[in-house]
Length: 275
Length: 243
Ligand SMILES: Nc1ncnc2c1ncn2[C@@H]1O[C@H](COP(=O)(O)OP(=O)(O)OP(=O)(O)O)[C@@H](O)[C@H]1O
Ligand SMILES: [Mg+2]
Image (cartoon, rainbow over all chains, first blue to last red; front, side):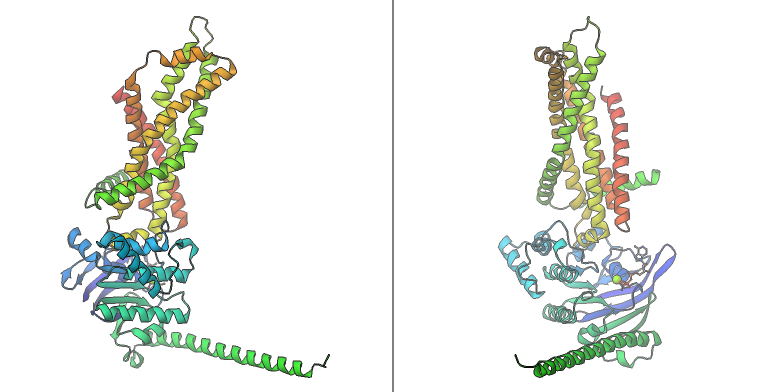
């Protein structure tokens, strides 16, 4: 369980986080939802201590983290798996070395065990056989998946994912969501996911925190989210739904178009004079 | 300025607190050393050979008096290259080559969150990334400087004999006369000091990059100019203190 209390952060006079408190439960998927630029990534970085909050504290399973001694913070960090918004793969290493890196640095596994684990993780994100590729040879979505493989390679206790499925096609996005859900439940870890994708919310969100301009406006489960009367959240959901509907309508149109073309084609074929 | 210096000192101290295991640092140092060595050997060879050649030709052009033996040319080429040209010019060339490489590499890692990724794993990123670079530079620079000494003396030999300014016999007599072994020690000490300055200043500049690709470029440039200035100042200080 991760608890945050009254987190404040400003950058040069610009308030980005304005007193956010909350609890992220173990064995559940905790979502941080919000529009672009509301401070989701900054909050995630404050939680893991990459950005020092101006005020406020974070505790991991009862251990105070934010301003604690370096040893204790590093101890906790070794239990953290994190996917960054821009993947943050080590670009001088191959895919295999990237996923192997936390295993090599943080565990006592033998080389053979590690390679097995790497292959297992790559398989789970659908990238088996990409071992020898360099990050520069991968697409954005593939990088993201390698980033996830690297985050889950050591059996972490806390998993943080910054937009795990942005830039992925809906099918792969769904697979990644399911993977994260599986891992969370199987190993009973505490997972926090940053997202602005309503699909993820409906698929996997056990607990959702909605951020708006640096404040926590709403908190609840995915069943409650549709009945909320908070205007900002409703706007957000509505915009997302609109997008999805628009996409669906477009797709239907395209299918219709294709059918019509096929019919036309068939008619022409039939009417063609023989010979 | 003073603030930068304070931050630099703090940065230096962070290299040594709670580092990674010695085995990891050792392996990384060897990797970095090979990288620095291989990447720089060609440019160092070219520069030092030509410097030796030019020194030889210019000294012989200035030595017109019949009273001074021609072997003095060889003597002077040796003294100038060993004491000053090989260590200092090599280091300035390396400040450009290695310094920009270090700053650019670390800067890119910083802005693409690779440094954050290390930190989140509980790894001390300065000790993991920077310490091996510094140790590798301190290890490899003296080797490159020794190579530069040999090549510049050889360059002088080739230039001197090809132009007919000096015979092979005279040149060899010259480079063997009045040899002071301490000069070599002095040059090696200098090269270690320069290596330390270049690698730490460039790492410092690269590590504290924030922003985007533009800032990485700027960090590289600042790293090189700062390193060169530091090398020249240190060169003077070394000469005052050690000679
Ligand atoms: N290092 C920084 N220095 C200055 N301002 C920053 C810094 N990091 C973030 N910000 C500012 O904080 C605000 C929130 O940024 P953040 O990256 O958390 O957004 P986000 O919610 O993750 O958005 P997105 O969904 O687009 O990733 C932005 O306005 C950004 O300009
Ligand atoms: Mg973000």
